[in-house]
Length: 262
Image: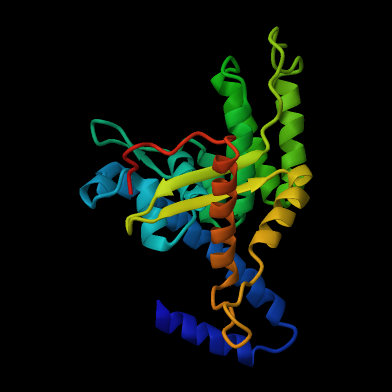
C-alpha cells in the first residue's frame, strides 16, 4: 500500500495541468472507499468483541485509544459502522447493511463521511411509526441526492423528507421546557491515569469564559530572568483548576469527596 501511494505521488508531480483535476477527483473517491473499508473493519471489531478482550470498555474507547481519536470521532465511526457495514445473523447468514443504498454509494466512492453523517442523522430522526417501506424509500432518496449534493444541501433535503414523513412534527409537550444547556463537557478516565476532557460552550458563553481563562492563564514568570515555561494548553488547564478552587472557596461548589479516586 505504501509503495502504491509513493508511486501515486510521483504521478501527481508528473501530471500535466489538464490531468491534475482528475487526479484530485480520483484521490477523493479512493479516500471514500477506504472509509467504507474502515467501517467494515470497525464492525468486525465490534462483532468479535475485540475491545473487551484487549482491556477496553467498548469499541468506541478502543478506537479512541488505538487511533488517537476524540470520543466524538470514535463514536461516529462506530455509529456509521453499525448502519453501513454488512451484518451477520445468529445463524451466520450474511445480511445487507441497514442503510444499504448509502453503504453502496460510499463503497463506490460516490459520497463521503459528511454525507453519511447527514443520512444517518436524518434516518435516526424519522418517527418510529413510519412504515418500513417509507423508511427504505427515504434512505434510497437521500443516498441518491448525496451523490450530487454536499452535506449542507443534503441536510436541507433531509429536512424536507422529514417534514413529508411527519408533517405535524413532534407532539407538543405539556411540561415547560428546561433552559437550553450551556454546552457539553465530556469527561473520561484515560488509560494513563489522566482525566480526559472534551466539549464546547454555546456562543453566548464564549466571551465570558475566554476572558476568565485568559486572565488566569497569563504567563507568570518566576523572575525577569526565568520565564514561565508552561505551554498555553498547560496554563489553560491550571487556570481551569484555579477557577474550581475559587468556586469551592466561595462555597458555590460541592466539597471534594473524602476519598477521591485518582
